[in-house]
Image: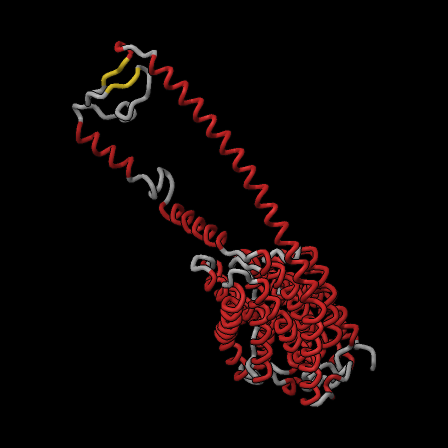
Length: 533
């Protein structure tokens, strides 16, 4: 492979810089898909999520990341139109990186989870429109992408709700959910393993020769491994889990007993206080003489100096109408805005209180917390691996195009994706996750709806199943959209007031704006760069 010519060198250098910044933004925004619900359910701390994310995002990027980068490089536009004008295609890739990067930083700053895939697709279309107008764009694929704004969250939400309702009926609603949960535990582990193993081996990595495995071989590996995992869990883990969870339940009961004793002591102290005050009041009453009583306008008698109901108002017997008006105002003050305070702000506070109250009621029993905690971590780890493989291409796809076109001098881009560029993109994702990842993780895991280990497991499995089914049927789908759809759907099923609908509306608006906004920024950058050359 020859060295990059001088006229292309500046584009390659700028491309590497912007691609790393874009990888940073992807790590900050999109890794929340994998670990947001685990952090929200308090199964993992933010630090633990970052450590696991760093390991498995990088592994996914290295082992399966090259596969998707081909689609980003050559699937959206017809690269044959750029034969003989390779410099235009290279400038376009720089513009695409710029448009996607700026939009992702804006979305992350606003704590909004958006699709990084749609962002780079919109940016690619943006520069193509400037370069060749409407020609050479795969409009059918664009139509599918627009459709996926609705398909992804709805389909994922339905599957997650069905999984949750099944678990609710079989485990959560039981008076003693431990034994039913332990009986189903091997099935849960086997199902989780099967979904994720199939996604890894089916049309898998050519680097590891997974792509040479026939379909029947994929089924044998997938379901054979799932059965083995299920048997190991049943024979080895279930007895150990039973002892561990029973011990945990006993500890919880002891804690509740201790808290009850503290409350009883505080209550008895309060009662003593009340009795003491009552005794003092009785003594004071006995010492009162007739001349120490105050007679109110209505004829009622109270001790001198004691505030009376009638003396607390500005009403007098000569102003009965004013008195009545003031009285009715006092009674109706609840729920109305105070002077200088808008009614909207009062209603907003009431909505927030309802949301907080509803979320406080969403909780798992101690045994179900332990049952589903490790399962949720397992699904999050698999999700992180798949995310690293799929979404690293969003940052390094245009960069690979720049490198190969600059090296080969051809728009066809026949060479394979270099491993070291995958590593470069993976490193940017990891740094972005550590530095800024907490923003969107909090939105997806805590702010949008409250999640618990059981609902978090259903969300992870439902979204993973949706991505697996849709990708193999040929429906372009967004992992971000799937995860948000599952969080909202399961959250709504658990409690009517659990979901922050205002935040969900803002996320939907960000989704709809992703392709056009990233495309517009990319088109502007392309226009400026073309005239600057």
